[in-house]
Length: 585
Image (tube, rainbow, N blue to C red; front, top):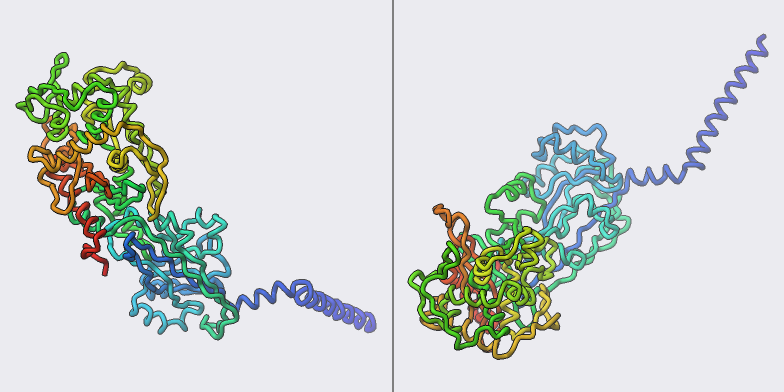
């Protein structure tokens, strides 16, 4: 009996030893590499080093942005368990819910520390360093952010940085970026992000139990992104913002001989510095709910009746089709009748006998009613569309561009199932009724007319380009149009004579687009007419062409034309090396 017990005990001991040996073999041999990696992860940290972004310059070499350091606090993933989130919340000034959300995000990587708070003050850094022993794995790191040197000026074209989104992280090019990395999310920052962002560096470091760095095992330095030079002139942008004051609207300026954008301003604007370290949700919500719509790019995303600036199209069509000549005179008595309606001229008493030149200089509506009647809407449509209206310009700002609308008989028949009426032609001939256009379309139209008919692709980058097409207009048509547009600004009776410049000879056309509310007798600024002005200079050899739109600005001559003058003179001063306006600090 005793022998059997001894044998049983021996079997049990042998069995236990076999289990232990098997377990040791499993841990050390079968899964040895796995546990070695886990052990290494407990003492090694992989830290990404952000790359300085490339600098964005304007056409004159003025930097529009600069890189700035800022500090963040992160925690390593293996230190999550048992962490006192109440104390951590008090230390960082974050709610417990915010911390829990960051610690338990689905896209957290077991090898990448979790960023808890960005943009730390030096006081916050000192407080965190003093308490690090209470929170193993908590550490402060340096990031690279952006400062936009001109604030709101040019924000819609320069853009901003923002935190990388989950959909962007699925992009193979961005998979190596940490979840809270800042990349281009708008404008040029987004459009040229791959060039600007550079290549992040990487540091593999050994740390102690508190997460403090002991030594660097391996590292690769970050590679700075490429600098880029834009075609825009920040002096024009600054002059435009100053000239607009608190008014809403847009300006687009183009170099007529290359299609380069010299300026693109949309107002009111936003300060991209709000985004440079990641914008707070409350600030983003305030921007989205702002009734003034600062995030709307009015230059390409808003369409309005172009008013009398559209008379350039009607005039070109009438001259090209031969239905009027420079000597054709029409007697303006203050309006024309059509059935029970009267289509009035802006000058209630009438202009009297008006020839082609005077009709444009003084913007006689009756003259263009008659020109439109003789042409018909389909011929107006033909010349408007060939000059780029009613279609996207193709400018790439990573936002949806509006097309505007140029109606014709087919459009009305298909969309409204109605025939076209003469009264609608009267309205269309002076840029009212169904006709709408964007500021960038109007700028390209006047650029094409001013250079003699060459239509260039619009570009944000400085450099020569070839025309993408040519509008075949008679030289005498171009000459008569430019001469009349010069008279608008430089002759005493011109509707923009108050904006004549001493620096250069400006040619242009004013426009006033009626607002529906005004027809109903409603009062207040929001029911005032919109103001337009399209222009180019110098008249003989244009170097800049632009369109200005002022929401509820009243008359184009008194509201939009002075802004155009400021922009053109800013360009001329900048081009001639005179003192730049409003350099960034």
